[in-house]
Amino acid sequence: DVKSDYKHAKQSGGKGQYGHVVIELSPMTAEDRANPDVKNDFLFVNDITGGVIPKEFIPAVEKGMRETITSGPLAGFPVVGVKVKLVFGSYHDVDSSEMAFKLASSMAFKEGFRKADPVLLEPIMKVEIVSPEDYVGDVMGDVSRRRGLLQGQDDSPSGKIINAMVPLGEMFGYATSLRSMSQGRATFTMEFDHYAEAPTNVAETVMKKGG
Image (tube, rainbow, N blue to C red):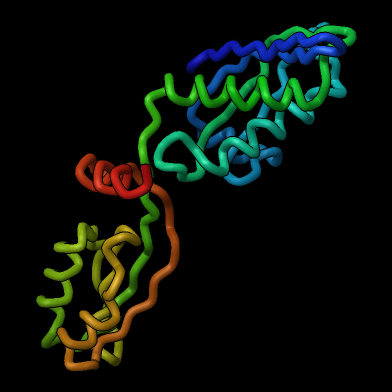
């Protein structure tokens, strides 16, 4: 868990701005994922007691974080799989506002997230290829070259069904490649399955392009 403490305080002539939050960031567990409050693979938990932050400001704290995760610190990609617990903070009778708490929570999240050693994830697709026997060797070799993980084979009237998990980034141009490899006789379908940590070389390439 990473703790982040951020105070947004400004004073100029008239009314100032004041919002202060302390949050704890951690990776979501399987139990967290079952929580009905999970939205967009992100869980916000309000653990404030004793009114150190008045309850009318709590939605602004959550909103500040939810807006921040849509464009994360790593090349601007969305943040997923994170649980944030609001554990402490403070407010000012006059200067506190929803905007001040939203800014404080956004900055607290950015600072905490960087400290948490985030990793870049890539989407992994569940791929099913139906190929005549003659081309199975070539098809499987090609899947491996695309960093694919073969999950097994089944028989079908059209030949072999090859199941694999392949990073989406390696599937561009696959339809054309499969057609030429099988003289147009193999077909495939794919759907999103999960996210997985991108290998270092892939992450570095993406960061150079995106950052």
